Image (cartoon, rainbow, N blue to C red):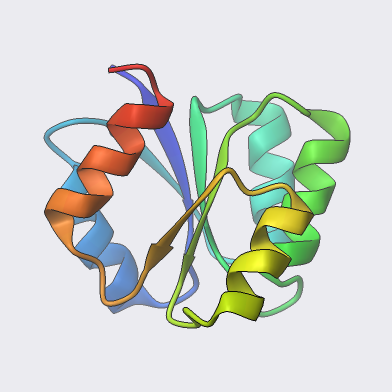
Length: 118
């Protein structure tokens, strides 16, 4: 089973992601961007779902940190900020796709499957 690191500081948002993904993937959780960078390096998940607004280190900085060390690690932005500029910033940081909150489960699963080659 593929492993996905979900970087999400909000418990209810993480619970929703757990509900959507638990039957398809093994999940790991980082509570902030700094933890996400550390866990990506130590746990080597198949993908990272990265919340953009987190304490200690935000998602853009965390994505750049992950990509600097693990350039092939797929990172998908997970954010309520769905403006064109937010998308551009996420892609510029190294994200390969973008999932808007509130998360649509079918769209989320489709995007993950596409990038995990399923």
